[in-house]
Length: 164
Image (cartoon, rainbow, N blue to C red):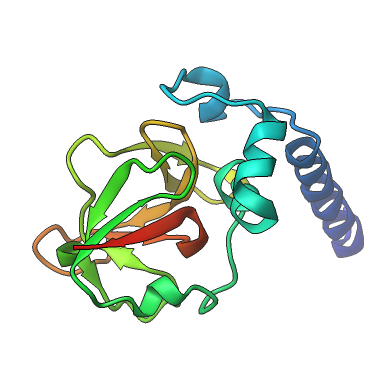
């Protein structure tokens, strides 16, 4: 195969994956297909509740544009909760400035989130989702500061801040 054929095959595969996700199809290993959550709603109910931006992230595994969330600059005491079900997720004391353009935390609250392997886009990452509703929050990486060495890189549109 020459480079053009390889590029065409890659773009075609990405298009198929995008179509499946947009059409509501599931892929092997899709955590939503494998788990039952305490908060379950129809896709129409999620769309009506969340609006287009939050729905794209929480329910369709999207990613908001870096630097677009006001929560990245949030510095007050309080907690960050799931925009889908109000599950408390992160304490403000765990938030740090990662320089990535997304709200980042060293650790979630106990029993607040779950993780799965996300092998989309040809790489392996650890996806973070709300333990109560299964909403996609972001990813966790092993390049954070002490004390955990982890960086929970979250989509701000998937969170809501509650001041103390």
